[in-house]
Length: 90
View 1 (cartoon, rainbow, N blue to C red):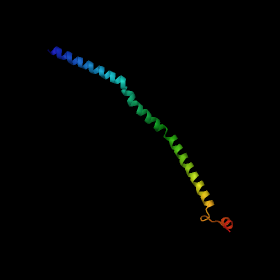
View 2: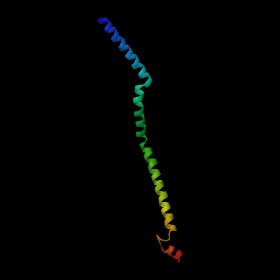
View 3: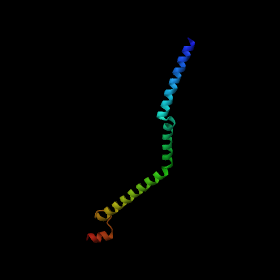
View 4: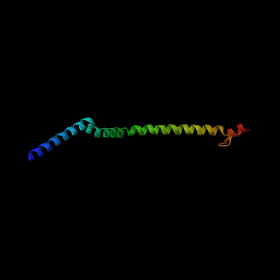
């Protein structure tokens, strides 16, 4: 009787190990855990490059905004009236 119970428990344990082995092969648990870690490292090491690109974009947009403001100021007779503008208006 005891021998049969031990035999059954061993068979169940073998089945469990077989399922666990198949699951580990199918899902590759270490790979699933390592992939996000590697992606995080890549993001961390590329932060300087991303920051420089963002700073360039912001600087360029500020440059374009200042250009537009200058053009508006030059073509608008109500603001920034200087000596030469007053002569042109007369």
